[in-house]
Image 1: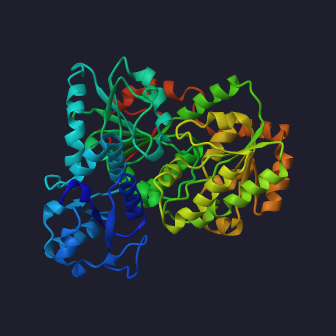
Image 2 (image 1 turned 180 degrees about the vertical axis):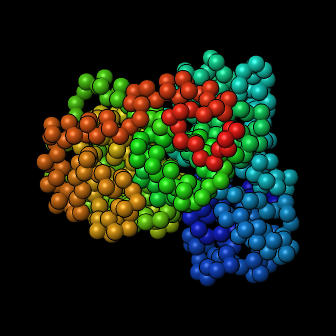
Length: 521
């Protein structure tokens, strides 16, 4: 098979497989068919076969079978079925989870057809083989620069779209002189956010770096060896998080895990989650603060320009998570933007999609879940007074220019209000169901009207936005609420730096909540 005939088959037909197909197609690696034991109809306009239906002709027509199944047991069972069908081990590659797509996209983007050919070659049995082929020389070069008398601290920038980087990058000037500070990422970075030592590396490979003394991340993705202490900074300013089971499993992975809580609501959410799932590793919840907010407030106070816009920033839509139909406003997005354009012709309408959604949309996903997002993007592009903010890592231009935010359950609602002290209108078409199913367990739902008002229809949206524009009372209310909610406002990075010795020396801090630590710890 020549390099011009390279193609793949994807095992699995879920959201993960959809993203993998779009990524490979974007970089010129077509999928010939899917393999799934339960689906009986075509998927993404391609044929779907059970493993038992694969003939030798099917097998020889593709370069690689890529397993797009996240659940370890199901993935192993699929692998065994492929092997029993006579498919060679070197023709099968596991793409274990979404972070696998991240490093694959980096490699495809940087090395183009060289990376495609390496992925499909018979000497690449694992994705890590492809990664090391291209990136390991840089790793070795950087590691030679470490000072032996300094602790090795890693900043783990993992998470699609770059949206999490600025939750921990303000630590760099506080740490880089006293420690061997390195940053890790599986996406191309803005150099201003990198430490002086930066490694492009998958989260899987980061889990093999046993020379690290501490890893700091803005997500709970596995990104360090189990024995290396972790500090996870909350990238959510409050407590709206519908993937509690997912988070609990990953919070429980490191032997020692510190959770840097942004707010009182976030602190309590962590505590309840740990208790509910009966986690047994050593855990510590730190009343820390929100580094991103501290920087935001500085930029907002320095802004001297106009407030001539209304910002619409919906929550994550192109992912499978519990209660998405209640949480996301994407099905109503075009109607929302159209209503704002009609009611406020003197205002610019800025649409800021979730960074992860935008990244997936740019890969031209074909599935049904993407259609509402695609309609929104196409509608905005046709309107002269509608602007799409596609800056994945910096939203302050949109924050500063807007007089009011329209959102749903995105945590950007609280970040926006606490940054600008301007109101938020929460669009919630299924508010009664949201209240019944989520209000008791999430302060986010209970406290929304501390920041603005909840609306359930398009006419109500227009009316409330009009009343919110320029309201001084809501500004005072938001300011007071921010003061009583956020830990260490304005000084979160300094607070972490001042108290880092408690973590590195594993000593107890009098103000932190320790869980599952023995009396000797």
